[in-house]
Image (cartoon, rainbow, N blue to C red; front, top):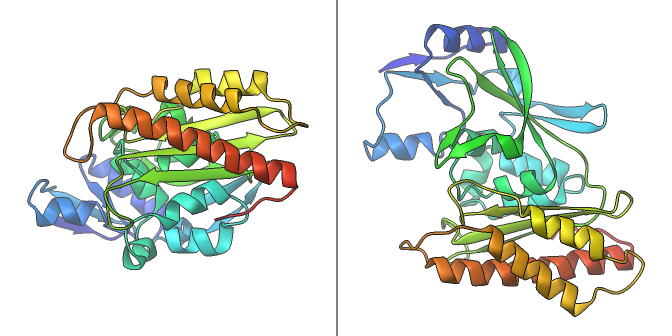
Length: 287
């Protein structure tokens, strides 16, 4: 196995162009599992841990540009109040050791339907900034996934950063697993409210071939909500039903399809009530 360790972003892009089959590695929390169990044996590993540009984040116009090398732990500590939904999801990832190494960009690169970071990115309308020696582009996250562990990246492209707007209102993330930590999700759900724009964002994980939005549920809620009044139980129930209907889960060792649909309905109602309480009380918390 050939091991490449570029010192700059430009060198990394040139290496990927020269070795299109190279597997990028940063935190290694997914790649090393595949290697250790001999499920994947790439001919070339492209180590990005020494590329300084990837470890930076900064405001860029109306969004935050979070470098692909920023680990979950830093995202939680430094950006928790600005992107609370993503920070909540990050807190559920693995163990402290994993959160110190793993990255949101790595989660995207693996493209697992169960990736914890994906639902809050979908709910927030985030973008994935990718680059090659040919140039750069920003892909809306809801167009990034093409199937289980597949994405739209070209063979010479690397993820440079995540582009996500600071929260315009309350956000929540909730996860069902067989235990509280170190577990692949049975299902996950994220919600983002924008009271000024009167819009709603959602994200569903581990309940379809790819992470998805519940678009019908979003449209229903945006149309039915009276942003200056208490939340009606009938609206919350119907929202939960529409979220469950958006999913297309399977039966597997972690849970049945029926259970996942039921759990998603519960998560949707609960997170909606939590965010609505934050909205009505005039405060936003990062749990």
